[in-house]
Length: 320
Image (cartoon, rainbow, N blue to C red):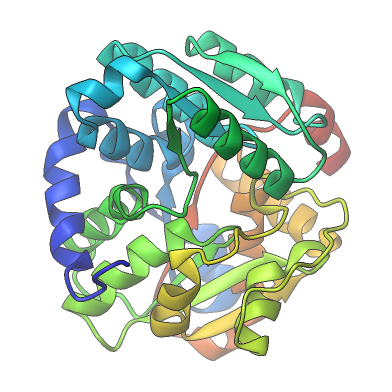
């Protein structure tokens, strides 16, 4: 059982622990999105993080928290790509061996990134939740350590280090828009920022095609729902039963916004054209979520988390 009162302190510890291994990413003021919406829009560029995604933060904090015995036993992870690449990178740097299971239709870009980072890739299942359950069972059968992409306090604390950086980079933040899948990123950022600024609005953004957390919070329990194809493959799929992120989301998230595939693609094009960088679908979801409700934030300091930049050439062609 997670001690949610201790989570902000755990996040500060995580930020200090992982600091030497990660990049403090820029918080860029976006002239384009500010002029478009009338808000003061800042983009937290986790697409510039090592391995191209925020996931590296939680991966390093988790692997660094393992005992020597656990490290020797080896690790197992399940991922649609970014968590797997991050875990592979962290394990390689820290001398830990392991296996990364990915869903069968994971983009070749993300699979290649895991392999380049030094990870052994195996395919299983068509939904992220199926892959997670298989990886958990494999780890238990082989006495290895399972590394959850979100349902783990050390992973959440690592992702929350973004909140520590944001509080230092922009002292007055009115709202933060964050793409949500399993909820690890928004749980960490939200828990920390609410502890230092209770008035900040934490806003969940999800594709309408895969809105499991949104619908679960609405229902008051984690639901088992199907997901349709979406540009936001990093947030697609179900949520593990009993995930600690569900209760944290209920505590810290102020608003839930759903966006269409067309809105995601439009947001991605706007970012690529104006900022001349790549972003992946999940990052497009956060921008699209902000644009959907931007009229409510005129004149306010808004942060959008650009959570990753790992997009396949095929998806990029489709978006453009």
